[in-house]
Image (tube, rainbow, N blue to C red):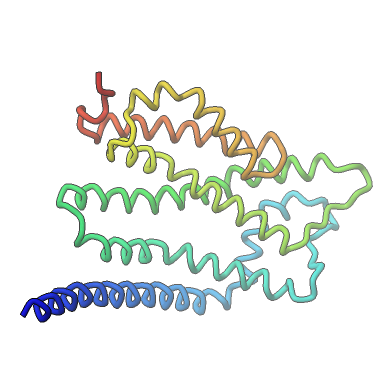
Length: 254
């Protein structure tokens, strides 16, 4: 009888695990399918998307110069890669919703109330970071690069190199703009307090410039354009911590 009882318990433990794995697989497949649908719908406009992406640079190139392709496959694969990335960006809200639906049953009610606004804010902040990079950072960076070259040297950027460069900055700024959410979560979880973060402000500022140096090209303009928003967003996270986290967690223990 004891053996039958232990076997039953084991089966009951295995079945929920299998059902969770099956649910995870189904949600991953739905996410991949949506990315594929976005990709197929956008691929016809792949060259137009690349043209739009390259405008911050091409608008500043001297008359008579243009971007080039040093690899025979670049004219196809650069727009192809861009379209795939755009499809993933477009599907991010759905992907996060699938992730939320998977983990939500295991959360407490107060955690659910906080998680939904955080998910929405995370998506909006990521998109804001990408937009900030495209509309603010790129014109300044490319304006600097195109105006500092030696006389007599024509600037003709490879399309694949340009794509890799801008995608790196897109992801860097998109992730950096999540700092308020990360800061709020650290305070909310009890890992740190507002007062403790305020005491470490000087180290955070130095860290922002170090991260800016590592994630951006080796020029002062792009490093500063990444470091300054990081610091300001950190301050926003502290303010949000004071507003949304219970006072018992905000204040450092005596």
